[in-house]
Image (cartoon, rainbow, N blue to C red; front, side, top):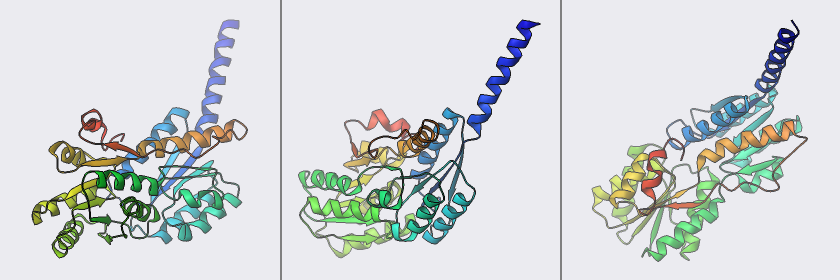
Length: 306
């Protein structure tokens, strides 16, 4: 009887502990129209982290890609009083008030992916992501070393300050003026606008595409036009890996987006459960290079965990 009581008490205690863990609820909000292969990897990272700590993760995005819609999602998340909000910050002017309001209401916030420069001033605990201008500079340094003399940067989200920083860094590293065009998120528009730009200026010998789907469409445009162009990408996808192995793209910048989904959940969990335990600095998830020398080792993870 005593043994049964002890076993039952232990089981009840374990259930109680599990119940406390599952009560943690985090909301992740990102800027995407659902067409970019980058974000499912971020979401997977967040869900894997939540599963590891026994928490619940809600993932939201505004299908229109509108910043006002994303701000409303952030406001709604804060009103639901979660244990924390994880939010990308491509436009601090548009999203800042909603984030600040959440912080003022006592909801801990971690920004991720974009918005490093504005994160602290809005009251976020920290930021997880790569320094975007630095990433662009690294791409530009390498492109110049590989022979690029006149570049073109393709930006699929004109409102996104992180993508502008990538383009700006690329040209800063080459000592050139910014030459950036808006290609939207539609693959056909990307291909058409890239081809038109290359045909309008045949001196362009380098293209930087700041998203994986953009790079794939840009590659088709380069082949359609028959241009001899050095192509560099940002982020990984199965298509980008194939392009690198085929020699159609020189390299891609890897910002390890799984970490951008995974680490904020862990940070918030530690902060909430261990008296404000927090890393002493932002967590840089990149940049790193993937090229012909190491593409084979990460190819299977592209679009899944990288």
